[in-house]
Length: 66
View 1 (tube, rainbow, N blue to C red):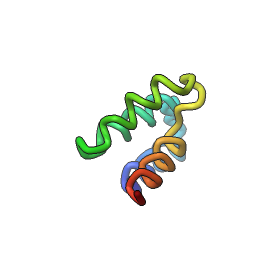
View 2 (cartoon, one colour; view 1 turned 90 degrees about the vertical axis):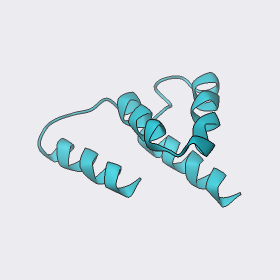
View 3 (tube, rainbow, N blue to C red; view 1 turned 120 degrees about the vertical axis):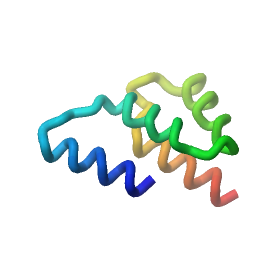
């Protein structure tokens, strides 16, 4: 996750803006298959405005802690 966050940060510094929902979807796609349910749950429970890189990261970290 940190490498993906670093790439988005470099892009942002270069004035290349990737929409938050796209960043979140890229992160979800990069997750191991065991986290597939997180994406489905987030898409059902949250609006697209609420689905961000940070929201996905926090959800994955919480799920991993269990």
